[in-house]
Image 1 (cartoon, helix red, strand yellow):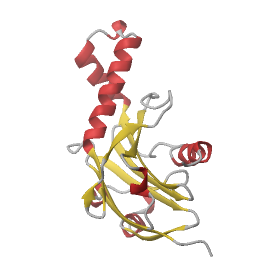
Image 2: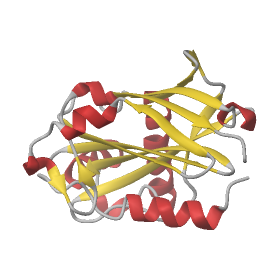
Image 3: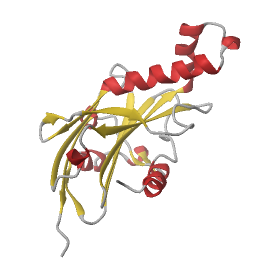
Length: 205
């Protein structure tokens, strides 16, 4: 099993900054990490705070009536929606497993600009993401009718190597205006909603 501490530090660094653009827009970012313990697949989604407040008021009305129970129920509704709008394919087939919220009280919480949701794919069989060669496709169909900024970060440590990454040429071609020192390059190209990766694991010498 992966080191929870190491994964947590990498994940925190990867999503430390929101997308650096207009706070009225959504974002979705794939975060894939390959290491000695296997491959982790996470998708970070940012929803504008004003949109969240609007959805909450539609459901519960008076904001003064918000309590711990209604807040927890609303967060779970958001997680459930995202789990339905995310898919992982391995070797061309939909992987058995489910998308779950990354544990943590900050997940599903917000600031005055964005609410951040972190979803991780948990395979039914852990061996699914430990094969020597992985042909992955991550489908991010979150908020399909909204204008959305998209990005991806793929990291690999020995014994893994990234053989191909469909996001690289798309992000490399984006304008410098869509670059942020903390979170890297972003794009509005819808091809990023389907991230295709090939990862290979080499045997120890």
